[in-house]
Length: 138
Image: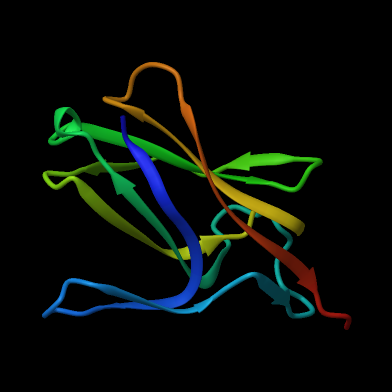
């Protein structure tokens, strides 16, 4: 069964061509919004951050379409992104999403849910990334 083994928000990342290893820069657990920043949940608003989602696949899942959505929850509300698709020919696959969506404010957990071949129920992964979104006073 597909498994998300890393879910993180970072300021950036770099892939080493020689070793094929990622280096993540400034893993982010606190986001301070400047006065006048758009409200959370506004369509098309993304933060200058990256979301990294790393997957482990069973051999029977290689070459199949994995569809996943990010889930943001703050205890009062839960919001999902649009679906992203991955087709991997390797047992491990790394996805980098530029422009982290700003869906909620306050203490937030980012989670992921997935399904294979665009059918069936969504499966929630136990992986999560905690962070807080706060507005700076004007």
